Length: 314
Image (cartoon, rainbow, N blue to C red):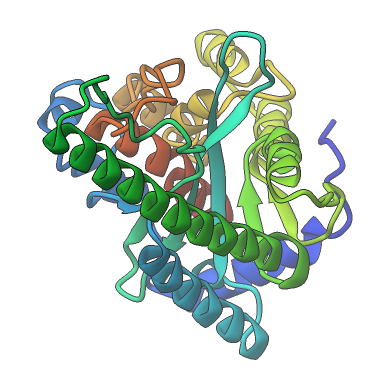
């Protein structure tokens, strides 16, 4: 039996399906199979179509807020469609004896050219970013160096304070004040982490949040129950959709071979779809700078939600 979706999902999905019939810019998996990192092509790993934008200063935050505001204005004028929705995800880290802390929050947005783009925003506390080695020497040169170091640190602290304030203001507006539809995946944990970061509770039951894990599970179970297939194909379908709450990697693999009237041919031709690599999931997210693979991983986990939703509504 098909699971019942939250009631507010129905009008959102219906609006998306109606718009998909008229819109030629609906993204497809092919966009994530043209990697800019050679290793992704060699291993047949899904990839961002272009490098993500790294945000770590107030100017970057201001630019991102402008982009988000444009989407907010667009959503006020048009019905729900993919290019006025925002996908989000977060990465976090732990230190000995402390609770998990947010490292980044990332956003995926469908651009005007139909190609999704990712922004990865630095949320790590930088109190220990600058370290100085000051000798006990009393020479004028050493004293001058120490004074300069302290001055630089004060400047850095002021810049960090401005950046942290700008980030929190942006997150409060996006998650608490705006009415933008936000797409996540198993996003309760992300929302709880963001709530702790901004110091205000975000209602996980808000009708603005669309959880792709719930939608994908619903579609996968329906396909399994409706499939009229031979034993081998039935076993394959069961293996990739047996969990009522599948992971993101499983969802991406499944919906690249989504059953339809010709599903037997699809399964034979695409038995090994491109995969969503999770190799960076447990990497050190407290490090700075993040590696290119970490930035790619973080950005893709948001962008892939737009493509996954597009595939389901297509």
